[in-house]
Length: 251
Image: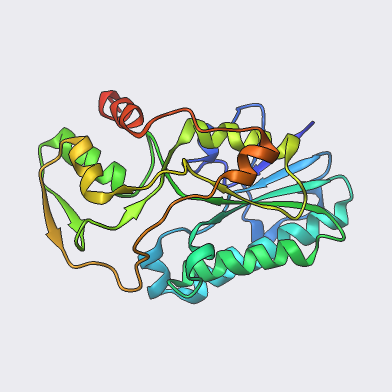
C-alpha cells in the first residue's frame, strides 16, 4: 500500500513513517500527476492557528476548504487513490462557530461526506495532540519550565482538555488506514479529561493567569468507544509520561 501525506513537514506529519511520501505542493494547486500511484492520502495540510484565523478568515477558508476540495476532486479523478484520511478537530463536535479555523474543518468534514459515493473517506477528530515539536499549552508549559520562566493560564484553569501523545496518534492513523470504515468519524484522544491547572502542576511550571479566550469550550473529553472498537486501538502513553519525555528532550 502506497501512502501519501499532505502537510508532511508539520508536527504530526513529521512523526509519520518516513516511507510514506510527503506531498510538498500546496494542496490548492495539486495536479493529477501528484497523486498517481498512491492508494491512500492522509490529509494533514491546513492552517491551524485559531487566533490567526480570526484575523484572516478568508485565508483560512482558501487554504483549508478550497485545498481540501481540490485534494478530494483530484484523488477521485486520478482513479488510483482509494481512500482519504482527513484530520479534523474536536471543536467540530462542540461548537463549529467558535473560530473560523474550526468552521473550515467542519466544512472539510462535510466535503468528505459529500463525496462518499466516489471515494472512501475517514475523518479523525483530533483532541490536544502533544509531544516534541508541538505547539499549544503543553509545549508552552514545558518550555517555560525548561527556561525557568513563568507560564500563563488563560481563564480560570478549571477548563478541561483531553491530551493525546503523538506516538499514540501515529499508531491510530496507521490503524485508520487499515481498519477504518468509510464515512465514519473517529475521535482521537485518551477518554480522560485534565484541567489546565492539573496540567501545569504535572509539568511543575510556575504560572500566573490572564484573560480567557472568547467562546472557549469549558469541558472536553474524547469519546473513543467506536475508535477502539473499529480500529482496535487504545492510547498507551499516560500524560505524566509524555510530559516527562518532553522535559527530557534536549532539542
